[in-house]
Length: 448
Image (tube, rainbow, N blue to C red):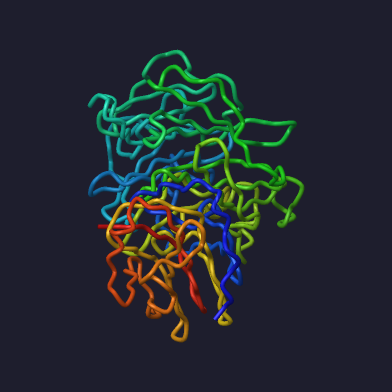
């Protein structure tokens, strides 16, 4: 068993987490770690979910958006058969996020026929990025919104299919805008937030602007990634995580223009996907500089615009979430692939067989029980000790009172000899001491 760490400093103000879900994607809640580390988990590559094989789609289809809308999943993407050809915005839908169809919408003509899945052909088809507006003040006629073009125009729709410009004039004019530029209702901060392409000293970066009405926007400001090295971020795919909307997850496509892996490719550059997070919308923590999504062994993915993670993280099973990413861009078989993670499974606190532990900063909570998303080996375990703000063990919640937890659960309830009820401690500053052996912990929350 690892030695208990030195007594933490009592000077910190407690963090009020209430009963919300907290993911260990950053060090925000962590005071110290001994023998443990944060581990980034890449997605498991699953099936090809969509081939860009229609005449109006083709090899340069890109800038995909995916979101769940009640019992239906919606997908939007740019259709582009090749350089210099007509761009259109296409639509697909699914009952489960896995099996997708392209409905014949009959809205716009392409080569003399309206038998297609095109939802927009006007200004902005290059990078049309829609979302369902969760703002309770949004009217039914404007329930779906989008930013598109460059400069950026605002579009609205009552049903996600029939679109019109909110107004003719652009709503955002300061930026580069030549990739997927997105916006959403940020419920945690009570405003619309837009994230889009800028250049800083010749390097592709990300800017943020906010709005109360989707028309009048603040001046764009570059996001702050701290001391992380400056790299080309081609897209950003920033989204609130639906299970913990106070957390913003971002999946930039990292572009390395100086490299060329396939000699006969017409363009230089290779790409992969990275992962970063934010708790205020402006400062993003790159806890990991390593790739979240690598190109892999297939040389057709070692080109300049591949491995572009779509905008959207969706649940596809009770214990599973999915992302989507481009493959074989600018090839005849250009397609979209699904990536799978366990629920909340982007990052974990991990201990080896020798064991390790983590102590949180002082926390305030509401609820009756502590729930962990965890996984162990057959010989591994998780135990939890509760401490007061100064690091003193709380009676009845010592490590010796907590039977070893082992298994693999998305919602595992922690218990002590006296039971699992921690309601007597609600509203009082405390720290969690997690002691792990050959185990991972992904997230935690206090629940009723």
